[in-house]
Image (spheres, rainbow, N blue to C red):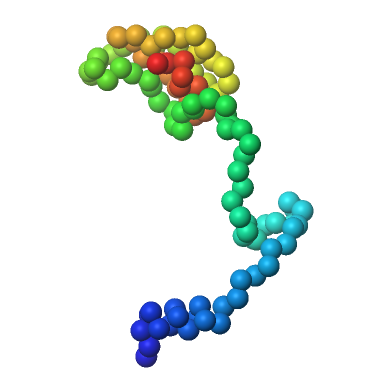
Length: 100
């Protein structure tokens, strides 16, 4: 039996890089990208929440606080300022910038 390092070297010594091909999107299933794909602009174009939850001010500590706004994907919550003693409900994709 050979070592893992020796086996890796054997494989790498005979492996060849495949050439890339361009295919329509509907034929791309099961294929691997030849290079990274980068978006020209960030989407969404604002800092967004990755989970549903509540925006709070940590220094307020535990307790029950009024929900003063909802920030959903899009522009809900625009112009809202989170202040001490309040919270905002934020859905996935909700705009975070308006809360700080």
